[in-house]
Image 1 (cartoon, rainbow, N blue to C red):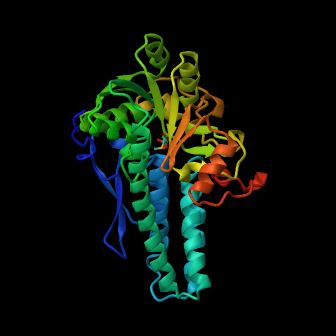
Image 2: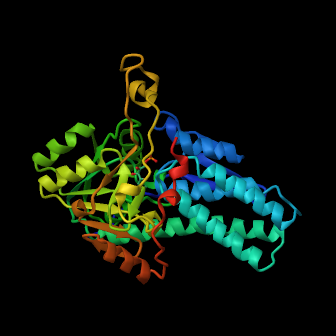
Image 3: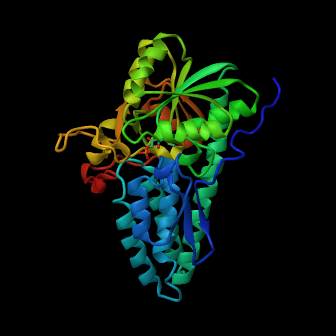
Length: 381
Ligand code: MRU
């Protein structure tokens, strides 16, 4: 098979830190895509919390990187101040960021990683400036490792994709959702680059239309064959025999392999099982929440009614209409054919398999969290 062109070459950087210290975050304003391509300059913690809540930056790994940069925005001005002042500002910043959105565990993972780095520097007797410098290094490392992780998931996932494959995906788990080339879309980009022909069916993904607005935009820009379908078409295209596999991303994976992702993913998984179609999840180990035994503990964000009743500012339901709008659902592990991570594929995920993947990656497997300590529970509005 001849090598194809790199479909990610022309994609914009989703977010970046600009200007050293002090600096700011530049990010693609995703709420305006595809109509307008605009970049946002985020200079304060409050602006970062707002950007995450509004979904200007979204997708679990991108939220993790944005959170690490948000920490820098909260401490970067403390020049020449004592360590205690820096740690106080750090704690205050974390408290604000952890309320931005509850479900994507990468937000809490990034805060823990930044916290561990700050604590280590304090334990060494580091000055306030040295603690801030260590936090800068850690945030840059989080972004760099996200890029590398996406590439590695792409390579492992591409092995599952046959030449000529027709893949259904849900939401946007591409470059716009990460600091790199994506989670679910990374294997598609990699397989395309390897010269395999891949056809993608993208669910539009109500209510905020990440599939229609973002997935179809980024795949088409990269020259990948993409067909947009309404969410309620997914079952029918499977029935018509037009889908060979499903590939989605995830916002949080419990220790037993239950997968939380954008609302509608569970329905797609059930449909895939009914039609004998493999259902794969692509997610970094930073998306695993090993402190919860199963998906029933995941805090599920509920979004405002207007996102359903007035999409794109256009009212489509009567004033005052009651709405239930969970942003995510949980697919039981038994419906998941495999989880593609940066260290390889966990086939038919189970608690033992997830623990083994962590140990092989040299990561500690934490104790299960007590009920009041579940990550994200404080952010439930
Ligand atoms: O509400 P969003 O747009 O942040 O939801 C994003 C998703 O559900 C993605 O599928 C998930 O983060 C996959 S990882 C790139």
